[in-house]
Image (cartoon, rainbow, N blue to C red):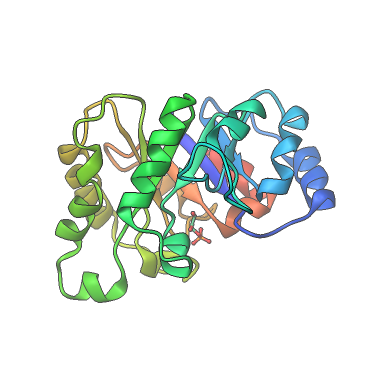
Length: 228
Ligand code: 13P
């Protein structure tokens, strides 16, 4: 059983959500999770039984005067069972730090929501060949955590670009991540995954699944990926 997670990012509207749910059909044994934008998390009631809901982000705070933020308790209230944190787009555009991401992890942990923690290096870091150290540093706060944890290795230069690392580079990074966290942790790959490359990627030893961006917006392609 692998995890196939679709991150819709800031795309779609309610008619897209209805259309996606109607057209998505998949009998795979894989665990299928979608992360639509927050206003559409309440479509959870309309999802097929084999599709789970994730949020794309959560507040690092429990409750209070934090205009615009959504707490882990609210996600729990909606029966959302997973939440992406530390996506590189949030690290870049709202300057999220590893400390804030860890605070978010703690909030999710209190509400028994499984975090999907994104890590991954920029092109510049990859060119300097320091990507393994960079990612190990991003994992620092999670080395001794035994709760159910999912990491997603998403090299920033592979997101939305059509470029992906070689299969052996991905395998190597998955091993580096697994060597630095608890043996219960799962590790996914994300960055330019599509229906054509999914089966090669899913054949990587030690890889526990895929985090899919653009290609998850198409329910037929996403079902193909989930069945790869
Ligand atoms: P793409 O699949 O569009 O490259 O996006 C990957 C991603 O950022 C998923 O979180």
